[in-house]
Amino acid sequence: MASIGKEEEKPKLSPEMKSPVEAEMVIGSTISPTPSWFTPKRLLVIFCVINLLNYLDRGAIASNGVNGRRATCTNGTCKPSIGIQGDFKLSNFEDGVLSSAFMVGLLVASPIFASLTKSVNPFRLIGVGLSVWTLATLCCGFSFNFWSISVCRMLVGVGEASFISLAAPFIDDVAPASQKTAWLAIFYMCIPSGFAVGYVYGGFVGSHFGWRYAFWVESVLMLPFVIFGYTVKPLHLKGFAPAELKMMLASETVASEVQGTEAAGNSMSLRALFRNSSSHEASKSRAASRKSNQLLIFLEDMKVLLLNKVYVINVLGYIAYNFVIGAYSYWGPKAGYNIYNMTNADMIFGGITIVCGILGTLAGGFLLDFLTNTLSNAFKLLAMTTFIGATFCFGAFLFKSIYGFLALFAVGEILVFATQGPVNYVCLRSVEPSLRPLSMAISTVAIHVFGDVPSSPIVGVVQDHINNWRTTALLLTAVFFPAAAFWFIGIFLRSEDKFNEDSENVVFAGEPSNTPLLREKPRETEIAVTVAEAVSKAKSPEG
Image (cartoon, rainbow, N blue to C red; front, side):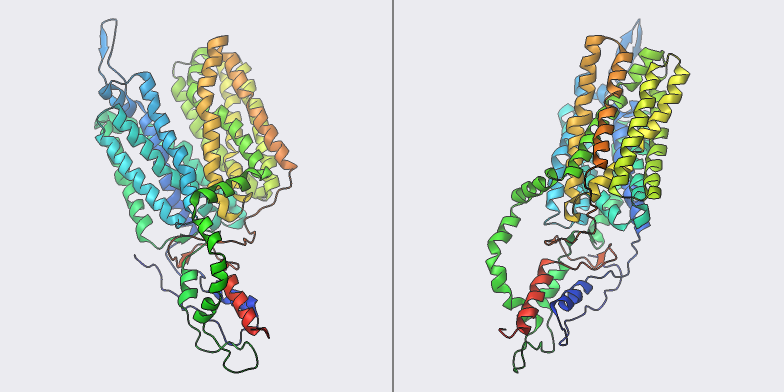
């Protein structure tokens, strides 16, 4: 595996070490950052490009050039079949299942990848996920019927799951303290922009070369990042101590003696210290074996998340918010066509969503940083922008004029999209660092399972019963207000930013890493504490 940067000489325990705290400091200093080509901004750019490719794929498969249509004949005029739907002769139901297949893979794999961070280096997991994504998109181009492409789309969701769960915590680690939310906003801005590029890309490639080439090109574009994820030294995610610390402690030898008492011959090397603590380690072997059970770890972590009131109230608001956004994206053009007789409703709603999504997402992130990025301020911003944005969107559907509708709806969309940075900031900062991957994964699962996935069919049922698109749109928009209410409640909860909270059980994950991204010394790891206790015992009269 390629090494980036020259390793610094690892410090050793000194005979003059006066206390266990000094032992801890020495151990912590052994994993200080070494020079590398990595910089926070470069990492942000890399992750943004990967995120853009992920959502480009989602936009491409929904585009007319890739998705296509079945052959139709109307009044003697026949249109040939094109795209996936035309080649495989899919019904509208089967065509819709393709997006659901992707979501199944994403929702099932997200918590699995998050749980694996306890035993596998998180950066390596991103590489694994990207390799699955690359192979799956390649196979999409070779699919031969409905079932084959459905399985491939499910695997695309599996591949994307690792990146969705782990990218945001890495960005949270490396972003400047005063720009945390802005960096998250830049990252999440790639969602609407990726969709937009995907529509154009899928339409162009599909119409000129065929829909299969769209998937093959995506696979080629992602390949460099797969190689990148496997070949560079894995990065250290806060809350997960690199395994090199344990390896160093097991192999390091102290040349000089550690004076335990005034009596001579009471010396020991670091290897001896580690060996003397083995009896203490052995007494915890059963606890260690319990931690090796991934299911038990997952359940324990889930319990912590569900008992975290700040996290839960934030996700509840996010679910209600995503319920509306998901239905807007599916039914918005049809509602606009029926209410305002828009002949080009797809382009109008798509354009508004893309422009307002980018502007709103960036504005929300930068505004929270300007106000000082605290959890309390995040909830204030979430409640305020969602409430005001919902009011504008609600008023837009009351307008009889299409121009009044477009003006108010655009302002409302900018305001509601301003939540993207703050809501994910709360997900990351309301939990301990080692729980951030799982918090992002469970948030993703929740907002889809209870949000945008059921919202479209529910809105369809409501419209079937009342048969009035304006009323249906108003009822849907009203769900924004419960989202604002949940986030308003969050303002009054006792919220504590746990990003710098000392963890008693820092997790050793994966292989050695000599390029930690955090510019700080992890002070309390299980092995460091063990060695410190051994030193203390050696210095005591009983030792």
